[in-house]
Amino acid sequence: MEVLHEGLGELVGWHDPDENREFVLHNKSRELKDKTMTASEAVASFVKNGDFIASGGFGHIRVSMNIVYEIIRQRKHDLTMAGKTAVHDLDLLVGNGCVNKVEVAYSFGHEVRGLSPASRRMVESGKCEVIGEISNAGYQWRFLAGMMGIPFIPSRNLLGTDTGKYSSCKVVKDPFSGKPINLIPAAYPDVAFIHVHRCDIYGNCQIDGIMIEDFELARCARKLIITTEEIIDNEVIRREPWRTVIPFYVVDGVVEQPFGSHPCELHGKYFFDEEHIAEWLSLSKTDAGVQDYAKKYIYSVSDFNEYLELCGGINKIEFLVKREAMRVPLVTPWRK
Amino acid sequence: MENNTAAKYNMREFLAFTGSNLLEDGKSVFVGTGLPMIAGILAQKTHAPHLLIVFEAGGVGPILPELPISVGQALTCYRGIAATSMHDVMSAGQAGYIDYGFLGGAQVDMYGNINTTCIGDHAMPKVRLPGSGGANDIASFTHKTIIIVGSQSKRTFVNKVDFLTTPGYLSGPGAREKAGLPLATGPYRVITQLAVYGFDDKTKGMKLISLHPGVSLEEVRDNSSFDIIIPEKYGTSPVPTERDLEILRKDIDPTGMLIGK
Image: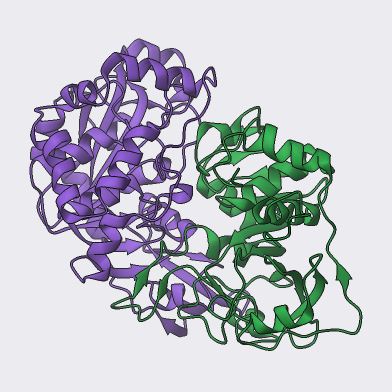
């Protein structure tokens, strides 16, 4: 196959498919065993300094924030992160010095809430390096190729653009149509963390609402931490097996954490905590503010439940549940 | 126009209305965060009740009760027909099912190429912007891309984008096809605070379609670094009705988070 262009981006998280099969053979257990543990244990066991990490969900939607805070609390460093519409998670991890390399589809912004002061500052000052550009579909399909156990997947995006030029993709002449086609390399993140509505102790998961990229991400990650609103009995899984979107054999750890996506949204359960997001966006305008935030919400508390108490506890939770059901009006305190 | 005391609407309302006018009933559209989302909802609530709105994170065909903050939140499949995945909707786009793509841009050139990645050098940017997100995909796959640039000026209408994030007509006629992008795709309209533009069939350069009320040709020319094609005939952009404004203010964005108060 004739290679027409080669992207300049660093190829991160790629493995020869046979090498990855070997990894799966020896490291991913097919045994139905209890994988429950605390967030602290999960991060200590599975996240190593220097790892390539990927966070599930999208933007401020169904993000495993309890793992994000735990990574900061354990002061992990030199991580490379998949910027697959990574918003609040990435902003905190870059801002607090845990992540210093990003492959960017969408990062350093908070959608309509504005740009992310903390992570932008790190990039613009050279403390965080953008190692490659890609698009949202491009990232999704990196995971798809990984999940399929193939080295790349062809696509018709990224062509002709700087996004493609700065990606780790290659453009070749398609042997079938004769037209140029983009090849997106597979990605196998060292560790991924995904928040779900419910799962059993083995890691069989149900998600309500959109899957976004998590069907693929769950299946390509080398290590997978599931955080869940609740643990359900395996019998509930077996009663409606068609609802299982992530099967236990790709899961390495299960952490039960109600409201574990706060301040992000969980479809049908609770809304974004706009006040908390606004507080972060305001504090993170300065390095000192980033430190103040981390001290208050991460280092001074021992776990996520203590953090939730600080954020307003049951009263705040009740409000966020009502807001998700549209029983109370939207507040947008981040508006200028 | 915002200084025009006779105007009964602000610029963001006008942009949303102008965007909504371009969307046809019975077609499908990918909408991005912000004004494109408002335009899609307004179209659905007025002339295009059967507009299939698709969100890149997997929300398909919602009937939107209020403005989502994010293209991934639960509202994006509210009373929808499917809550699926990015792979599913992006594949639908790549296979040709999505008619319109609706995007915003920080910098645009005469061929409708968009930059949302960085201002200045990529390795050490003066300003780091979020990157492509789904924009490169949407502009590669949809049959017609609509771009909203809220503030047209010499800084946003540039000769060359600092970084070509999202494909317009690239370097001109035939360039998209040569690069391997799907046939008969590309930018369709650009909406700014001054005018609505299309693209010349032959040169693929940006061309005036209509001036907003009260805007002069000089303003259009003075606020662009490249030469915009001015045809002999061009129109005046329609203005929103009281009913459009009421829907925008009361139903779609009651807090004014995007259209302002």
